[in-house]
View 1: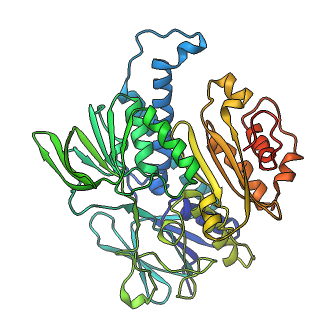
View 2: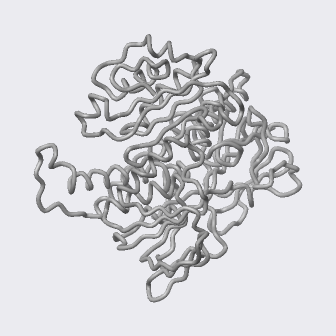
View 3: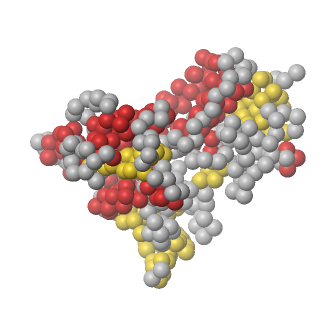
Amino acid sequence: MSDYDVIVIGAGPAGYVAAIRCAQLGLKTACIDEWINAKGESSLGGTCLNVGCIPSKALLESSHLYHMANSQLKMHGIETKGVSLDLAAMMARKDKVVDDLTQGIASLFKTNGVVLINGHARLMLGQKVKVFNRETRKEEATLSAKNIIIASGSSPMRLENVKISTSGHIHDSAGGLQFDSVPKRLGIIGAGVIGLELGSIWSRLGSEVVLLEAMEEFLPIADMQIAKTVFRSLKKQKLDIRLNSRLLSAKVKSKKIHVEYEDTKGEYKEIFDRIIVAVGRKPNSDLLFGDEMKLELDERRFVLVNEYCETSVPGLYAIGDVVRGPMLAHKGSEEGIMVAERIAGEQTCVNYDLIPSVIYTHPEVAWVGKTEEECNAHSIPYKAGVFPIAASGRGKAMAETEGMVKIISHEETDRILGVHIFSAQASELIAIAVTAMSMEATTEDIMLTMFAHPTLSESFHEAAYSVHGRAIHTKNR
């Protein structure tokens, strides 16, 4: 007889959501997690809650307010004098936000009857899981379950020619959220989502930020028109983004980091006070199981699963960052709910075509669905409409006039294929697009929908009109 109906390995956004939903459905559920905070205490929520999504957004908000107080409130008739930065207080607020939310998950586990087991998990044959002490690595228990869900998350990728420094000069993305002072010059290796968000935080707080990006194109995953607009905006914000720049070495000398890199024109040297390595993440599949499990992995060590997150081993599922698809908390959470409900006998699924993406710069960048480039590559006939935020009454009132809303629809059916937004509150506005697209809405449906005035959401309405050459408050594309 099994100890549990379900054992979930990992308590990040995928794992803890899966565990709670399993328990809600009447399944006897345990969740094994090994995350500990700086105090040596168990801290649920995985990377996202502890050193990723939540603390970064807390610092992005605080740094934006500091920047506004220093340079943008005067236009509103607000005079500020003697504005100063208390970085320790800012970090303490960030830590408090994290603590409150991690304790909230622990409370939800208790309320729903999820058994929390602290330790490192290792999968064994016969639907068994061994639990090891996270510090001594000594075996403490062997548990069994009818179903096992792998939600072990991901970790920052490392570069062979750069070693994360214990002396506090070379950091990964987690370390980049924990500085005790504002570096005069900050180098960031990678100008993807994480690099841009960390660069924005420290630039607003006073750092001279240089981002070295190996790729030739800026944000190739985004719509090209949006990406070009974002690039120009961030340049104006004094983020020095150097594309096609490959790092050669980074060495600490006299408490400074001496960096060498190259582009197509030659080799260069830079000196920084600190650097952050933000070149992506890799799945936490190592040390989780042995070859005897016969669990299929791809060439990048992601666990292979089908559309329902079932692995090659019956009764074994994998969700979140450890499987294919974008490494996004909301994607992992939806997979966790789907798997829990399918274990309970319900027929649910995840629409992988409608996963929203957000970059929390200012303005924010958000998108869902296809880009113009994808439509062209797959010979999909399309129409596109753009509404500039500069023409938005609410944008003007907020002094947030930068950016645009872009809608791409099928030329023949008018069904919305993609929405791309660069504006204040884009992370909130994109939900309108996801909702509309999940209901297979057309741009005509959006045109026939009444939006409140004045709002930023009206920009979505206007962009739909623009698709048909009927824009009211701006020139048609």
